[in-house]
Length: 239
Image (cartoon, rainbow, N blue to C red; front, side, top):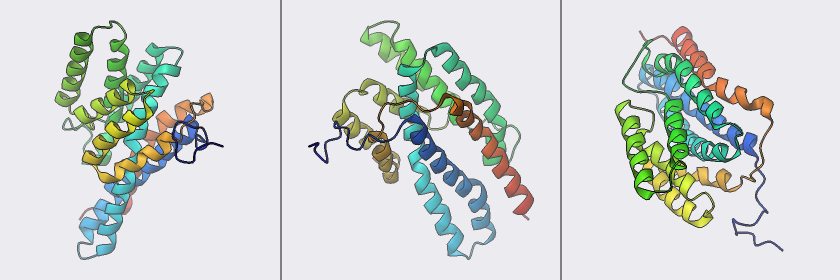
């Protein structure tokens, strides 16, 4: 009989890539409802503890999303048939998503102070792809330093932290215990609630989801940001 608590056994490996992405999408949506909608309500109704508390709860739930996306990015690198097309998709959606991202989070059509998370994922995928060109440790350290620097200077969402988390999931992909310890320490530093992301990550069974859902997950990001922006500005205008 399988050991109940042994993460290397298959007892709890019940989530394929689609299910894992759905968890990340729901977490992200709740987080963004908090940022775009509830933050406005919290500002308008300053004396109400309800909106303030609900806002904080949404932000806590939202901490699950990014670690799962980083993990799935690395898994996608190993399962994709065409890494160039994978990178192209991320790059295209990074550009498509930037205006919705700026509108939702700053209320401006163009805001260069932060860039959306697709840029972080694009740079992270470029980094782990470049690693495989040469085996030299110096090469890999140099690639990481350049990619981390780019993410910082163009102000990607999660910047150096995000690139480093992708690196950890890549280097320790087959080392379950080490991955959980090091990634767990990083997540704890970012926010204690982010540790919860390791639960669904460790339930991943390595199975791919339906290919027909692929673009739905990509498109959801800019579309939901636009919808939240319009809801906030039409129904909750700041006076």
